[in-house]
Length: 427
Image (cartoon, rainbow, N blue to C red; front, side):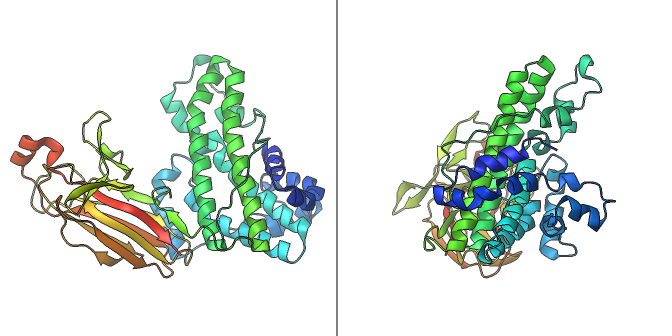
């Protein structure tokens, strides 16, 4: 257990509006204490009575079990199986995000501020665990990347880096709203948790190196970066649930830019880093070079913002080779009403031999299929009603395959680069 969970929770609380702090600070100790849940109840042999003696509300506020035999959650477990071997997977915690948002709001609406604070505190622990560097990246991987010095054989890198008591300081941070409805807030919390995990993961290798070098100051500095990220994310959570209960500024935030929204699963070429690329089309084997993201508009190239997709370039170079690339996003049902984008083939790649075809799927069912689009074609507008879909998949495939002779002549330049311009959720 990280020893800084209470500090994370307190720092987040002290970033709130003055009037909100006045409401919540009388229950600061309950917030700090509940931020240590569920770790202090890790002994599963505890009786209900023993748990209640430690905290009368323990059974109410402790993490609920993950959904079982539920199709959408089973899919999350399956698609994140490989990610889970690497470290924390925020997508697996979306059920907790909704649970703690709704339970906190319910208590606030009924005037039970102390119980609301406890729900908040327990959720702060979720955030802290995901951001913790040694949770974000499995220590087994660190031992493979950085050989353990002889002097540290038998040293527990997990507890050694988790309990450094790094300071938490986010004074001056202005919390932001995660969403103006519960479902949008859940999606916002998912984005926030993904950002925490990424920041935490980035700290783990330098923390291990500093640990082995005896540089405790660097260990603490890197740990603080992760803990501060967790505190900011929890500050946003507190701010959001209070605004949702007060129903303040309900009309704002009605769009979500998919360029910034974490994907749940993707299938792309290694030369694009195995994922869609934002706002540019990298040149395969270009050593960091790229073409700007543009579409043809009235016979002229027009710069756009969006996602670039590169179908798989690998052999075999046969007529029946499937050259599809896709990205799948998890959606909170009914959070947004529509998906909109414009699709095209990037005209900067003039040697592209084939057109591309774009498909939009909701819960694995195709709801839009474009025509075959070449580099000279104007973009096609997509506007799709989302309904209660949980999964949005954007797919692009090459209509045609090169021969081995084509590849020898053009290398990777035969491949078209699909463009999803201004992809967003609306409503």
